[in-house]
Image 1 (cartoon, rainbow, N blue to C red):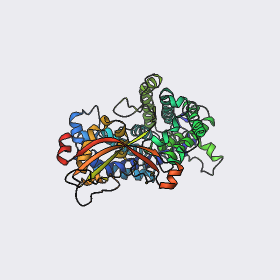
Image 2 (image 1 turned 45 degrees about the horizontal axis):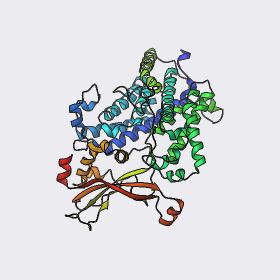
Image 3 (image 1 turned 90 degrees about the horizontal axis):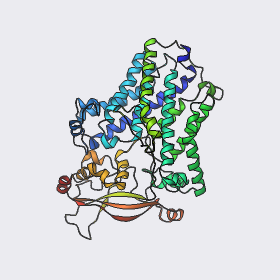
Image 4 (image 1 turned 120 degrees about the vertical axis):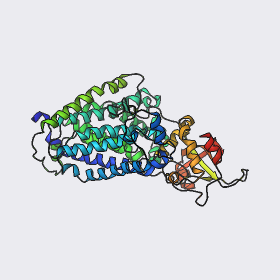
Length: 480
């Protein structure tokens, strides 16, 4: 079955699987550290309440059978441990069936978390990790060469990520077509990084070049992934470079890193060997028949599931980041079809005054990642995902979107809930809970070079108005 395997891609498989295990570890670690406040038994959107009203077929998860905070912690930390084992090569030390079982276990555990995560887990990179993780099951280990069919499936997934993103931009905000979107994007993106200020301050002609290059990379280059080598490797290399550019300019959890790993599966190891001193492909026997059958079945399944994302990409009403089934396979991808021209931030404040007056002193809650104190430089968090910080960006755009969880969040601040406070950078009320908590809406913009040097402030902000009136513990609880 020489046609069935591609030994020259053994290094690409190695890097992809080990890198994917790192992303899995980060995802499970984030779940373990954040779940109690977000979806725990006493969380803002508790899992027990969700599973009571959601049938298994709509959200398959082991937590449909049983949920407790202790059990969730066991699942998340098991995922961390298994991911760590995969990083150091445990899957290559066991029989092929056992390696596949390990990858399957990671996929099932993370699927179980995503499917009960509700709005906290409604991001496109969750589906991307699950779909890439599902394909990793069928890539095999050191006991067999990488299957050609699965390598083509990783290319098809990468194509959907890039081409879908390109289409949604071209069809969306007019600023993508007139090449001006990057006049705003670095400033208004969900969570700017430490270099975002510098990207924003690049000359406007260069921003226009960036947008034009983005259209080329996302609308033209993806077709090169299916070309013969070395064209496919060159196309993949272009994707890697552009994704690294995005890594430097913002915080998008593991979206860019999984995309990079998918691109690396396209690169022919024999071409790399001509440039770098890499070992020769190891000699391995042909794949067992049962493994070949599993790979073919996986291919047939993914081809069948591709009908919906293809239909979506061809539609004038293309949707971004959508799963068409509860297993998050055969998804459609794309982001930033619309770009905000201004940035608004919800600032949460509390006071320990028993009565509110003009003299009331309000103290601000600082988040770990989202903009707050204008003097605080944005931090690099990706590929780690700060879920609360990301949803606070959506809250500023749409109070309706934040309705299910924002009041429960405030309620927990009013009692100094320990799990909730761990999601924040600090607690301005360490000795006793605040008497009142309120939210105000500010418009933020990056400082000019002169303002940065004068004020040592990365942001300038101005008050827009009240977002949430002062609430006490009883009022917040009754409102939620």
